[in-house]
Every structure is written in structure tokens, then in C-alpha cells.
Length: 98
Image (cartoon, rainbow, N blue to C red; front, side, top):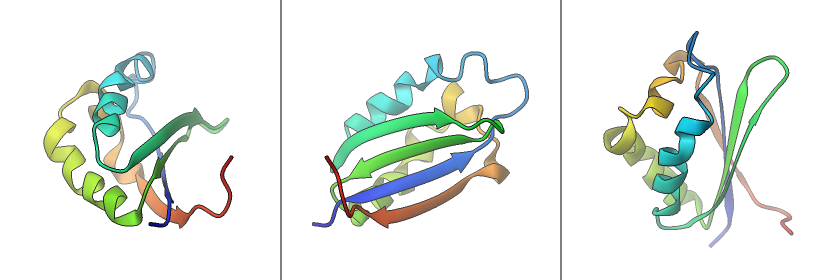
């Protein structure tokens, strides 16, 4: 298997930022239960854009989780805070990890 980084960038809906990080426990817990999950890092850029980087054992596992996440926890506060039209997702093979 080739380890994969899933890179998701997004903006939040107005008025949802205050509790966003605190409400992310449900998403982190959900990811941790998914086959192939290795790690997650969530960050915020100076321009207000958020970056969510998840490391997976394989691209297939990343895509399978992406296909299920909205059906399983899409109604959570954390997911509802994200502006859907701002979401951009990409994947990259891990070339170096330590």
C-alpha cells in the first residue's frame, strides 16, 4: 500500500468559528475508527481558510471514508459549520514521513 495524504481546504460559515475546533471531536473520533486512518492535522491559515490533512494507509481507504462521511456524521455541528462551496479536496502519495 502507498500511504496517502488527503488535503482538504475550506472556509467556515459566518458565526461558526467560535466552537469549530471544540466541535471537531466527533470528526476526529469518526476518522480514527475508519480502516487505514493514520493521523489528522487541522490548521487555520492567516486568510481564514482551514486546512485538514489526513494521512491514510492507501488512497482507496481515503476515498472510501470520503464517500461515507457525510451520510454518517454530516449533520454534526463541525460538518455543518463548513461552507460546502468552499471545499477543495486533493490527494498526494507520501514521499517522506518521519
